[in-house]
Image (cartoon, rainbow, N blue to C red; front, side, top):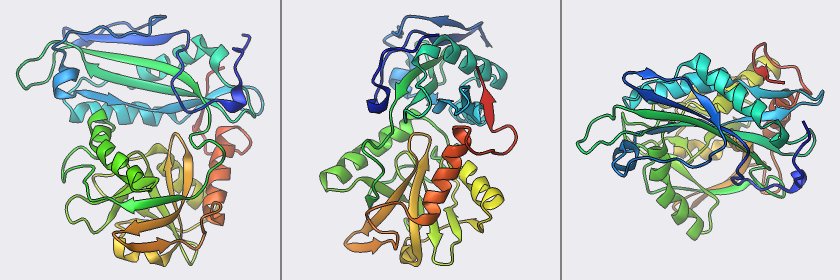
Length: 341
């Protein structure tokens, strides 16, 4: 299929409607047969549960053109399982994992012309999401839901290259203790928006949210997980029940430990120990890994040894290896790459 006439190398990270999206409805206690549609609009009742009680979960993954010309996705089975976990926590009917994977394949195949070519720096972002569609006026779970997937070609999350971020320790909480911080629900991201705008207004790139119970340990940013490298070259991953289990972070742990041979420790990380680390990064689907150069904790500045000009050597090696696996340049663990075409 002939590719769309786009300036692939200069795409931003923004929504662009493509030809087809996938839709399936949950009614009368069962998921109905799904189908592709060319209509990008969603029509729901003014009293739909999503609009009033925020029953909504979503996922994010990408399709890549590899060096040998195949179109692939990266560990989509983990997205399917995480979405099921998120749905259960919000009392929504989980969308079956096998159908999730089939739907991803179907919508990517239908939009092959929108998959960026290898070497362009761009990818096809895939957004599966599910929401309460039936009217709900009392506070209770809805009876009907809609599952959808759209795709859109995107450029690098950080245009012009990845520069180390300056991050502030937030005065706000992203999630409540024993709350929903560990699931991928839109309500969690809404909770982070005021903190995000406040950080930008004060000249920072992002927030570092402390744990909501004690506010003494590192959790995550509004949309990415942290990782640290100590001065002995060990990788330290913050651990908490209210951190979203990032698929990128979990993959980086395997890359670091099993492929690159680093020592990896997953444990609570105290704010007070940040000055003991040589490197810091934030990781997620959109950016893979972005380096952090400085954290400001209410006037206390923690400047990492890696500096404010480029990625530190360990973070760079992690980034190069994981993106190499995704693009087919590096052989990864069995089952990580799912070939669509």
